[in-house]
Each structure stands twice: as structure tokens, then as C-alpha cells.
Image (tube, rainbow, N blue to C red):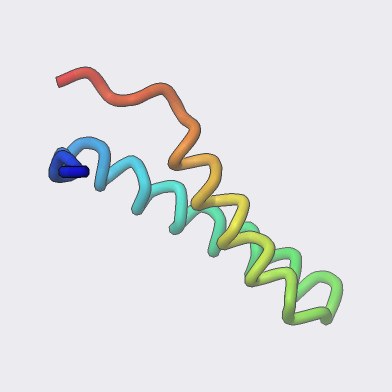
Length: 57
């Protein structure tokens, strides 16, 4: 099964999702004092980036 290479727009979309998730995770971690929120934020950011409407080429 051959997979298609990821387009630059899609890669940027996933990176933006991860960055936003990291920012939210760090914010919640600092607010609550529970560092595992960082991992949860990254997971949510990655899922959001993967599920967003694909960028138009």
C-alpha cells in the first residue's frame, strides 16, 4: 500500500495544530499545576490539525 507524500499545506496545518495544542497544554498546566495537561494539549492539537478541513491546493 503506497501512501501519498504529505503536501506542504497539510504539513503546515498539522504543525499549527500541534503548536496551538502545546500552547493550550502549557497554559492549563501552569494554571492547574498538573504537568500532564501538556500531553493532553498536544494530543488535542494533533487531533484538531488532523481533523480540520483539508487545505485547498
